[in-house]
Image 1 (tube, rainbow, N blue to C red):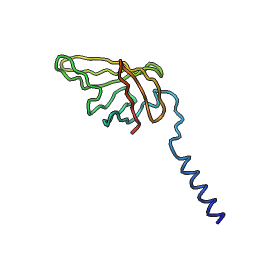
Image 2 (cartoon, rainbow, N blue to C red):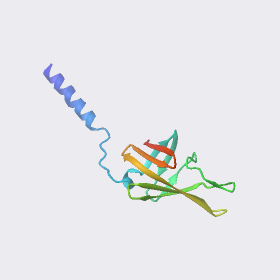
Image 3 (cartoon, rainbow, N blue to C red):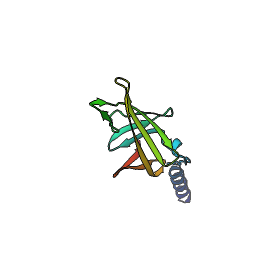
Image 4 (cartoon, helix red, strand yellow):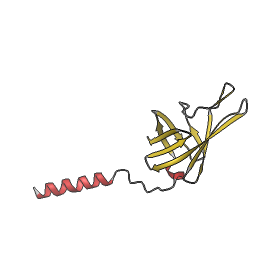
Amino acid sequence: MKKLLLGLFIATTLFASCGSDCELTELDEIILGEWTLNGSDITFNADGTMDDPDNVFEAEINGVSLQDKTYTLDGNSTINIKSSSEDPPASLSFSYEVTEYDCDEIKMTAFILTLTLKRK
């Protein structure tokens, strides 16, 4: 019985320690990868591009939808998202203040909106 309890304790400890052991502390490392926002998928790529197939960060100028998305970071405090199109050439940028983040969640605000990205 003692061996069974010891085995269960070891197994439980191993499974508990295999969870999200994120060692990352900087936003430029944490942001990379797949996220969801209000049920839509968004991917932040290492080259500064974004995949936003549902056009969550929608931008439009004079009826032209700006589908190409890139992002930059100002330290750990701001995410800048630029939406653009090549034909006709146009772009629009928005800045989002990061209020809180960890490996599985990024909270940010813009104007009166609060957005929460969740790791997929």
